[in-house]
Length: 495
Image (cartoon, rainbow, N blue to C red; front, side, top):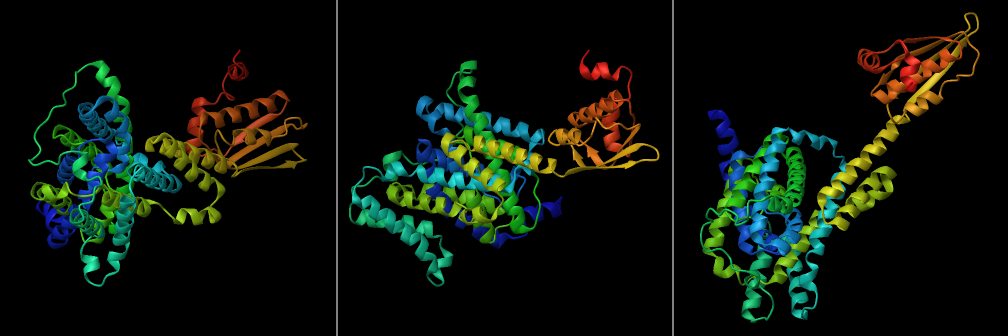
């Protein structure tokens, strides 16, 4: 236990502390911006980022991964906040946590293996598009100063890292925030600031039970949002865990991560924060900055709160144009630009899955719907492709008047019709041998196809012998097949 504690917490103290501080600095503008997207006070996102980061450091299943308030989750909250207010959002956050904990105990984290790379790419691209679209209201019907500040912010974000030495030490989004805030204050610009969006917290978060009636009507209102938040949160967290696993050449406990995300969201909701999940961008920043253990995540959360409480008077002066620049940077960095080039090289089915995922997400503003559509479409393409990898050949022995059919490949619902069409039932032959030694039967549709083939041959007067079934195929054929059972024809035809 001592060795595990050291490995998870104190094996990389210097790197974790420094990377945690860098992440905290970069989290502040994003937490505020995500709060604004959701339509709540900045303190809701800041409290959420602090709570989730601290709690997940202890209970999460992926050391070194950063979880906080995210744009993907914030986008799902807009309608709920607009129609019912903050209290219902807090209640939905609690229910989200409960659903995620249940998902962990049901071991649903392992379902991530069914999400193909093309779906993940579509998910990421759609997330980038939605984050960019969320910035458009701040760039509509505004003065030229806002456009100038936004352009200047993007210039700082992309050019500052090119400076020798200092460019790599300080996150460029933070430099953008500080410089544009200083310019706006010095020139006394009349533009929207964070302070115009709501009051920042000046105290530690306190326990806050949502002020909503405990009725079925309340459950009816929050349940759809909670399910969507839980699914999107787990999807993004699982994908982020996969990326961090690859970067660190380590493994993570995804089912524990599901439970950890749930506990963290419950903690966030009870302390006045909104639901959150793992952050792909911040997690990569943490890993590349040297963070490896749970200490880096804890440091990010704690340092974030310290900065908010100490520097709150400065944070309210941040112009919205600076946050817009940061979020545009996030959307540009999130989008997989290589996927556009790959449209030429990748198979058509892969491109269709990616594009459909993007279109559904953007159209519905719900990442879960897009991922579900992508997974279903990818499954259909896969089944269709595998269904073609089945071949039935035959040869006739004139001496014994026997036709021998050899089946090679996978027989299941997609290939069962091809399997049946491969037999010549009208041929006048005394004996038929169906050799299945190089085939595998997967489902009852395949068993039904075999039953029909055998019974049709028998109807034509041929003796049929089925040979070569492997153990797994024999088990399902013996259990569900009827061609060797009494009254087989009546059972098959439903008489």
